[in-house]
Amino acid sequence: MMALTAQQITEILADQGLLISTPEFKGELKHLAYNSNDVAPETLLFIKGRFNAEYLTDAIAKGVKAIVAPASFTHDTDLPTWVVDDVPAAMSVLSMAFYDYPQNKLALIGITGTKGKTSATYMAYEMLRVATDDKVALSSTLQVITGADPKFHYRAHLTTPESLDLFRWMAEAVANGMTHMVMEVSSQAYKMERVYGLRFNVGIFLNISPDHVGENEHPTFEDYLEHKMMLFDHSEQIILNADSDHFSELIEHAELAVPRDGIWLYGREDEDSPKADVYYDTVEADLQGSTFAVREAGQQAARLGIAGDYHLDMPGDFNQGNAVAAMIATRLVGADTDAMHEGLEVVKIPGRMQVLTTQNHGTIYVDYAHNYASIAALLNFVRTNETVEKLTIVVGAPGNKGVSRRPGIGQAVSEGADVVYITSDDPQFEDPNAIADEIQAAITNDHVVINREMDRTIAISEAIKAAGPNDVVVLAAKGLDEYQKIGGVDTPYENDWAVAQRVVSELEA
Ligand SMILES: CC(=O)N[C@H]1[C@@H](OP(=O)(O)OP(=O)(O)OC[C@H]2O[C@@H](n3ccc(=O)[nH]c3=O)[C@H](O)[C@@H]2O)O[C@H](CO)[C@@H](O)[C@@H]1O[C@H](C)C(=O)N[C@@H](C)C(=O)N[C@H](CCC(=O)O)C(=O)O
Ligand SMILES: Nc1ncnc2c1ncn2[C@@H]1O[C@H](COP(=O)(O)OP(=O)(O)OP(=O)(O)O)[C@@H](O)[C@H]1O
Image: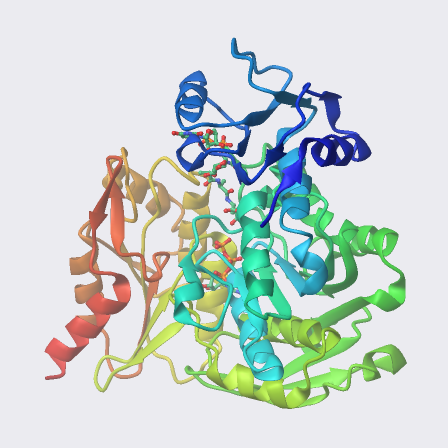
């Protein structure tokens, strides 16, 4: 049974330089929690975030045995308390000890980037499933997977879980015989110390663009970038996109963290990528997927042995870069090229670049793109296909969240689309029409035909009806979300994919 003695707790916290004071307590703790609702007898509770005094009363009623708290947390109980400098950091180091350092029994890949984390994570996961005969765990925005049996597949709540949950899941993965794990690492994970003290065998840095700046996120872009780059400091080997914005800052930081022969740069052939080790280029592409060639430049890269042509059964030229990063990572943890070929043939990512091909209404994409960088990348990809006549996008922006994304969405539409249906997307407490005004204000290209329809189902239906056989309709930003957040309530919504399928089957019956 998993447990920590009071002495172990004191030693670990002192070793990490986190300890301010130790209780006179000699017992053992058999459960860890950061939420009062999760307290059982013999629990050590972490007091973090905007912890309310009532939660402690609740925890005491449930039999909490001791707490780890910041100096600022005062309470008039005689509960044994470890006072620490930094509770999230303490929670991470104590959780890994409690679960007996499961990360040491897993080859661990961490993936960061403004865009493509989920996609690259699922690609690496599929390749490693083949390579390890299904002994790979996964942690992503969509799901956590700790075993091949679907009973070990959980719905995720955060991109990177709280440290306590992460180490518990890792331990479950180890107990289930998993040997590898792939996980998304958000900048928030570093900021909130959810991965404090965790080392990755391989860290992937996909790209960085302005996003995630605002209330509850990062105060500035520099803060966002700094936290993302912390993955370099915690990785044995680094895979870095040579075409990323801010590349010179990225490589400078990476080289401080890891020797050059532990850094793998990848880039697109035609981008003039600065001295990449691995180059890739499109051989053939259509609206469903692509074949791309991988070339190794120089002796270091040749050690990988992954040169050749690969087929990715998923659209979007940006997904080739995600795939190459994932390929290098899986190679470094033991996958062979057969596993890569097979994994890339089968990978599907819920709500990301899902394609519906119709007879008379062209090709429809359901995709999660929801900021300038991702919508621009998506529209640009469709544009490069010469058979496409009219490009329509259905898009909105959420209320009370990511407000700075609205002009970016308008700009991407202005640059790339022929027709737009501006609609609602989780309006919350705002008026969707006012949000639409902000998007519309940034559509300065007269060529773009603008429609406004705040009922998302109707907007999708009209966009598809108006599309001809050589057109493309992009349903952006909601992926497979099955609700609209309206006035604080998750209001059921059919989901973009289901609406599109229904509309197409009605039209083409
Ligand atoms: C900024 C941030 O990381 N916030 C997270 C953090 O909030 P917090 O510590 O302030 O928690 P809180 O909800 O105020 O509650 C305080 C404490 O009281 C406890 N509590 C609460 C209720 C109760 O009845 N009893 C009780 O004990 C809570 O468990 C918590 O420990 O801990 C909560 C759970 O413990 C998280 O749900 C919450 O994520 C918020 C909701 C969130 O969505 N964060 C976003 C910004 C985020 O982290 N996003 C990134 C992705 C970004 C990207 O794409 O790059 C991510 O990794 O997901
Ligand atoms: N490398 C990339 N560059 C630009 N856009 C991308 C890239 N990869 C994916 N996208 C676009 O971004 C969308 C989100 O992709 P994905 O979910 O993989 O990213 P993410 O980093 O997990 O995003 P988020 O942090 O928003 O959850 C995709 O649906 C696609 O439109």
